[in-house]
Image 1 (cartoon, rainbow, N blue to C red):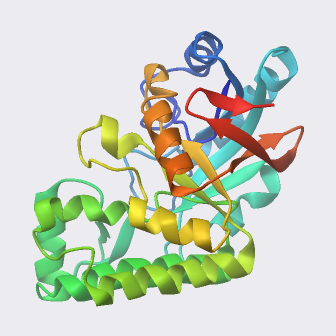
Image 2 (image 1 turned 180 degrees about the vertical axis):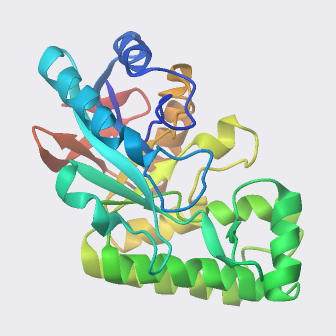
Length: 282
């Protein structure tokens, strides 16, 4: 059996309804399922949950919780961290868990936030106009914001820790072995260690063919394992068919690295469970 707490439905930019996710979960032997639409934000965002739909979203999940017997259903949100604007802390009391993610890094001169996980042309535009093409400063700022989120509004789960690497295809700007980049990761892991937050191992980049490895990269996973930081396995599914996409191969990677447990939200508490490439072992 499997679990997945990072899923997107048609309440935000997902393609599937809650019911379609549930039906797919039953076919894929998922026993624990969390919904995590992109949280509302106080600015225009085409892929976020509309503020006016939040109550309906939470109510629909609560109804599913009451009606499901074979699947434990949980209410979450993937919440952006933009200092002084939005953070996981704003939603945590109404949810079973939060996923905290960085999708925006600083602003263009006109005040528009710079989205770093979209088109590479947009990334290049922000790199030039905000950071004067200093790629090291831009990537460093991403991890500075991640650490600020952890320090000031720590979520339950740290979402796709190194997702900004999609903007560094074929080492266009740098190699991940460079000291400055590895230092940013080390500093971030040190902050995570202080909180007890869970780091997700996210497979979406692989099945979208944007990366060859999960978020975070295997060498970062090795560091997390040595630091005994808890992990959970997620697919960041925007379609019900992707609920366990790349789970088996990624689970094997994790066991090869030395992970013995992944954390599962079970009966309302996060607990470590043994796993292998076939799934969670209860």
